[in-house]
Image 1 (tube, rainbow over the protein chains, first blue to last red):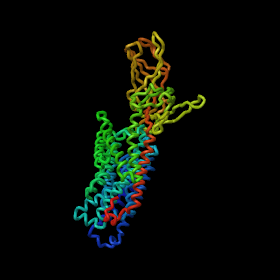
Image 2: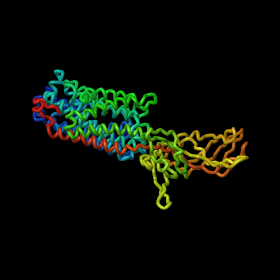
Image 3: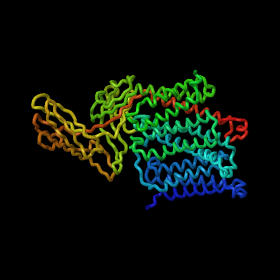
Image 4: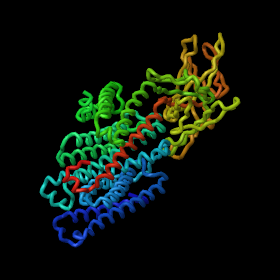
Length: 281
Length: 330
């Protein structure tokens, strides 16, 4: 296999994420409880540092590919996965920095990102064709707000996972340093509300782009339908929480369900359905 | 009554029904009724209207009120859009003037009342860029519009740059090709000049054929166009009808003749002259007077939601254990 320009940067970026994952796991382990690094919370700085390093290396990978093929990471699954690894890392790093309470949930968030990281390593970095309709400026806003949306959901998944794992003895030990379930639940649903804002913006920008690109703003193609279902599921989740008094683990399960729907919209439907965005090319 | 209608449980039922309707609408299947969407949307609209009036959680919080009012307006505007819309396709040849009579596959709402009669343009030449592997790139289609004092104004349209006239939006499509212009000189009667649109090119490069039966006869004339366009698979290529030439193979009554532009052939009931080769462009036509309103209403709605969220964010700290002990829910 011939190595292309972006691959060394990609591998190095994923390597940095791997180190961040391992340090985060070591940090929640009861064996490291008395370690000075953990007592002083220096391990959290290390985790943040390696995530940021990963983001910088992935920035270089995206730039190298952009220069090599002449367009940004918009088209192939390889490009989309690489670009999502970058944006998820970047936005999670900001949340990690600003919200110390969610930091131990990194042991759930980074392994979820590793699904994408492992996947991208299995794909060939072939040159993709840039369709005429992708010159449209609305693509930038559609993709940009979509990235924020998915990253907020991912952070919510970390907190949802904590609420579920805390029903086990081991989970209670791992996440002993985090606030109570009630506080985590509140924070998780705030992230979900912010996600709803960005999901709505993504649908609006996508509709404007679709109108320009394919002459209709909505056509119930498989990708549009799946994105709409994700929006509805998110709205249902928010209203369920308002209507019923639900247990934290149920709350966590609902958030994870919404994320699975969003994940399949991003990485499943466009590449599995032959009819996704029919007019694309 | 209004309070029951505004119930959050009713909202959840409506949302689940809408999710079901959206799932059934996947891929726009022809055998699924539009009512699977209309019924849950109508239920949710009623529920939402009742909630806006009676629920203080909504009507006493400006951001949330704006969001829900805009959500209701979005549903109503989308409905109005379907009642007034027009969707159609057309194939127009170079130098041909637009007429509403050339619209095909017209689908329109019962309240459609646009000024299609006032739409005027003449189709010009077009070019389409292709990357190696015959992957379609940018389309540049020239259209000529009436200008001031009888002059014409050229406009370049294509892909995501539609021609917009009288709120009708004309989008170029992948459907475009070549058309021989022919004159039929019957043994008896007046000559007729017209064109035969060949299948889309280069999609159907391998079958550029069509047929025609001259009026007053029963004899079918078959046409096969041999094109020279310079198309290459391994290098970038630009489809430009002005650089193309073609030989028209005419078959009728056991006779087979190859014609170049200007040539003619005698057939059973008259003579056929191949005048020249031209191109045609396929457009998608879209009309919906609500789209700008829809855009602004949805943007304002999201702005309302953001405002609500921002207020919440500033009132209650994100990680406040004390607030939870006091029973706060944000």
